[in-house]
Length: 380
Image (tube, rainbow, N blue to C red):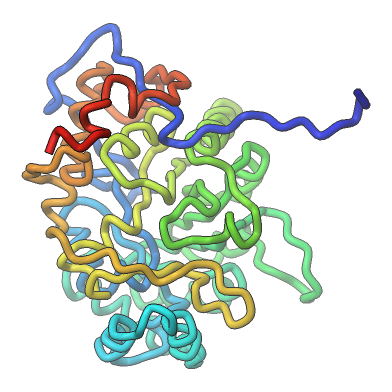
């Protein structure tokens, strides 16, 4: 066998692993779920994804009231249209086979920078925390406008982000320079590797988003063939965070972003090393979401290479029920906060950093072992 062959290392997603119970247990109500991004404290470590189908100003306000944080997409509908209500109606009414074409037409409307301040002010007037996202090519120009209007956090987000980027432009986005210019926490993503996570942290950012292509409406893995399963990606980026902390004394949170469907996925994210999770599709099903139960990705409307699709999720529950229950479902899709608290009780973790230390095992049969009657539909 040649010595220079390309080695394939195994990588694991949520359905491949299981969390081992701890040597001690605690009462779930003793579990502290708070997390912190450079002074912005969240009572629960849940972020709503910066997707037009999930977050509008009203949703951002409600998410703040629920103890979490919603990130509003400033490259999408909210900075292209003064009144987005009829736009959401048009997208929801589009026939399935025409949805992508209609999205491409809608998103061809030029962005209006003056609407950035409008959206930020709407969230602030409602008492919400204003977190807004930009793609890297817009962040240098647009993020200062958001901060001037009162934004509390900036998220710079794309399918793949690195600290070193080569382009034909005279000078691209330099995160260290952006941080000096605006005095609010800056989260950056997405990435899946130790090296990139550490290099981003060296730029002075305040959080790293982890995940490439796992979302239910993202097709980057199919179209581009790129991505790493979320558990392995989180473990690798968490190692970079911990090493950076040992070297500098600065603790930079990481956020597992995408592919999370159930309470079990939430718990595995934290056992893998996350400080928070960012979720899209489950929030799109909330009564408070603006898109009437539909969902689409950030690159679905790309003019030449769409990556994503509009899917019908349906409207199934309230935001409070998703996070806090009560739930009569047995599939783990409701009461995500309760699931995390109970799991932390079983592993004996009194806070999220202790939850990061929970033992995990490779267990591809964990969801099917002993479940023959459920699989046969006899449990209904």
